[in-house]
Image: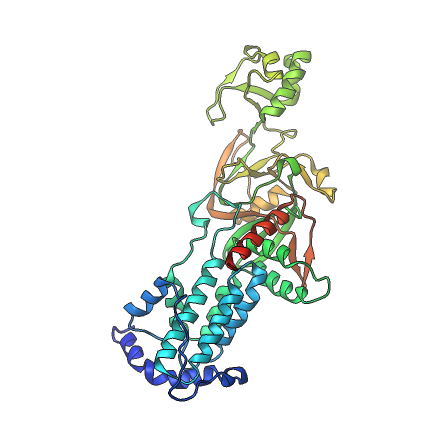
Length: 448
């Protein structure tokens, strides 16, 4: 773009404002509120944030909303804000009222009213977009590059100002991702029906769905329905059952990335299971350890040293006054199966194969200690690598790098879009109630 292009727009702003606003506001409701000549009521900009004001000041008041050919953008913003309460955006209805007032005051093309309306509309749009881009409460972000970044005023308004079709741009931004947009549309339709579901439940699920990207290759694990989805370019290309955490060991919500696959993994036995194993060692001795494939090690590192089994005070381990590091050797009985998929997170959660395939026949698959067992780990690995995946050798614990990091989102969706309707799942972990209580508090604060 040539340097003087923006200046040309600024010079023509006041000349085009009258035409743009008259076409933008040609509605009966707006006409009814038109001020008499010489008595234009300029919408107050007292609620406009300083960063929005600064955006316009440093750019000499460029038009974002009141441009020729953008007549549908203002009414669309009003509708989005009205509907946003179902998303949990507490200020949405209030901002919708402010936008309506600004549109009405700018109807006659008065320059001051148009400039004030510009700020009011941009202020509302900025707040809505920042709401959509906010991190999900309760989500553990293991990688910075998958953590949502709340955009500033320029990052929101410059693309809007440059969009050939502002309404198309708004719809694209507000869509967030296919899961989110489909769930929101279905929730809006269903909420209007008798017994159509609660807005609080929809808001809780939309809040979780916002963390999922709208494009690229990524993994979604839904702990509510115990299912994994593989996405490419915003659409699911494959799916499988998973086993997730039981109520006492609920699988947390996590956003991270898978960088490698571990073939022929060891299983590091958790402390509470090591204590159970110690009781059996006391009774059976070393034969028990050999039968289950356990060995004593000095650390969980890749170069851990194997220790003599009789160097451990097994009675102290059994009664909880001492600890031991046990790992299970690779093989058919290994609890990790043939492969596992680590991703950075503070809770030590990962995806893995399992020898216990019978669990996938159950309708209730909330059975693990928090980690995620895969119905078909080989198929999943093939998709991650983009080719048939296999261990280079039969050696234990082989880490094979993926061609690129694949984002993984472990979420919890008790409401999901299905064929234009909302399918509800049981709130196994009780997270909907907690999210509803938090949302109610936010909305109460917004009303003060």
